[in-house]
Length: 202
Image (cartoon, rainbow, N blue to C red; front, side, top):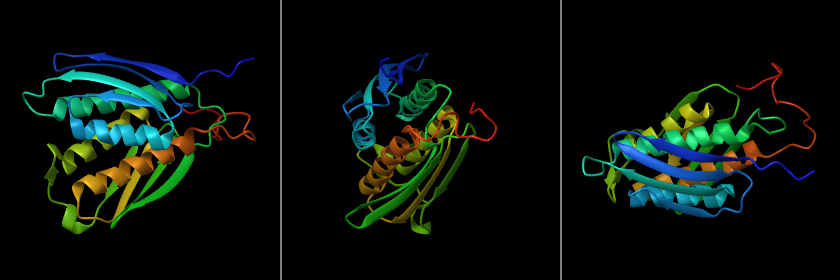
């Protein structure tokens, strides 16, 4: 019997955005991302590459207003796509923790695909103010990750150790998130059912 494809179609249309695409969890890291927000495209390409997910995303949004709606709605779509593609979560490893360095920046991302939403964001005090670069901001990045976790219905904890460059800070976070989601979604051959003593993850 052929292996079931863990995939999901992406489709969301509102008065503010129109988003389509597809997610394949067991992919090769191929990405085709065009959200209209160049920096976000770069981050999601890194996420897919390091997570070995095949991801297509096309978004048209009211960027004449600002990037908020497109940024948030893209996160909603990606979170829901993971939730749909994972189905009943039978056999998955569920947990993962990954640390990624890049030059003078390093971060740790922890995930639990356990059917409960939680988001914990810990940055050094000197990063608490809003920083902007390349039309994107730390607040946009935080909002994207929080919204993704909420719609995927997962625990997502992010801790930044070092870093002063916004591009590199968000880059290591998205790389670490890709690696963590890859491990957490992988099938543990020893696990015959859902990785919860409750018997279900929803």
